[in-house]
Amino acid sequence: MNKIVEVLPDKAALIARSQEVVLNQIQGAIQERGRCTIALAGGSTPKPLYEAIATQDLPWDKIHVFWGDERYVSPEHPDSNQGMARRAWLDQVTFPAVNIHPMPTDGTTPAADAQKHEAQLHEFFGTKAGDFPSLDIILLGIGDDAHTASLFPQTEALQVQDQLVTVGNKDGQPRITFTAPLINHARCVIFLVAGANKQPALAQIFASAADSLTYPARLIQPQGELWWLLDKSAGQQLKS
Ligand code: 6PG
Image (cartoon, rainbow, N blue to C red; front, side, top):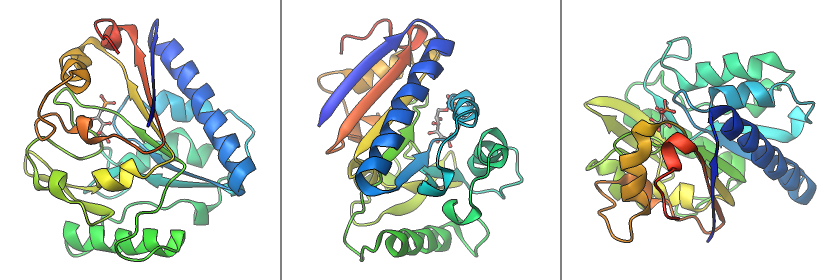
């Protein structure tokens, strides 16, 4: 694993740097493999990044978008991660509909939709059950509780090692989430973290020893590149 930690002076600088890193990764993937597969983070932090990417003139037909997690709501719901990314980016450019691979949330149960998305990923990547495809880029955030994607502290999702996708649980609310092993198979994982409220979680995530089931972002140790892009409010106390 190649870990890079950068602390940027403020949120605007964090978004500008994040755009630079993401665009470099997108262009590298397209040059090397003819396409880029990128999983988006939800929440609020990455929204301005998606808006910035939408201003670029990129070969959208060579980019495939996935999500690292999804709230179990319709895309029209204000909480939808899919809806946020569509409004901020995908609807603003000529992005081919077939290149957008949302997590289904309209099935009979969250578990059924997690299995459905697992099958969709295996079909897209040409992998079979038991294999883990490598996405080019997975964007992530962290919560104040050090969750990432929808891998929340002390939940069953943290223990899932043999699936690509599973059901997350936030205070009883179901989520669909990539599993830690799928995230760890990515070529490049990029955490975007802003705000002083994330300092305590970061301290535990970066600590030499702490419980990964309590601080789930510690589970993310990808075989490829690991980027931590932080604004000063979040990262100023860190010793990387
Ligand atoms: C989600 C995200 C989640 C998010 C963190 C940080 O569905 O909410 O995937 O993991 O990245 O909760 O959220 P903020 O960026 O809003 O702080």
